[in-house]
Length: 176
Image (cartoon, rainbow, N blue to C red; front, side, top):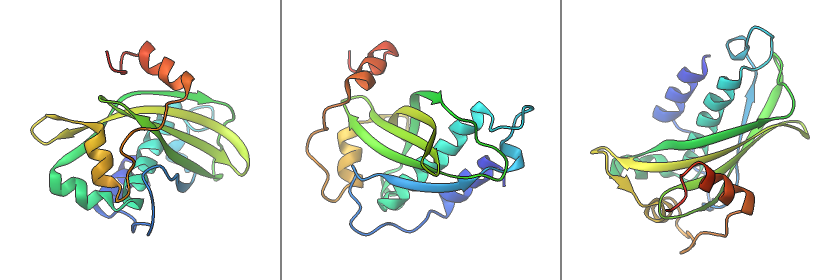
């Protein structure tokens, strides 16, 4: 199944919420590399990693029971910036997992890390700065989204790792 179709499926038929899941708890998505994921060199295309990360972020939201909550508010996530560091290639048929974790947030965006692993082997790491918009195009404050998604959400963001904060400043997604 193409990753775009998989994303559509996850959007309209999300997996069941995980009881007791907290906003700062990691979410795991297991996938297998299929033919449509490959480039001409027979490994996963770099752009496909971003589509896979999209699916894993939807699963993270579903784990929190957030799909219905976001739809009720008419809010949706968008990517403001992303960076992927590739370490090992993923090949046809290999099973791998993506661990999605919220690192923190500020007044503009939520920062996530998504780690791709085949067994214990690190394949790629993505940093994503995401924001939420309402259906009328208005930006939603990240702390409002965190409060909506987490029954016991922290009042304040944990401190961002220094390298993520520097990345956000360099890409101009951090608060000005």
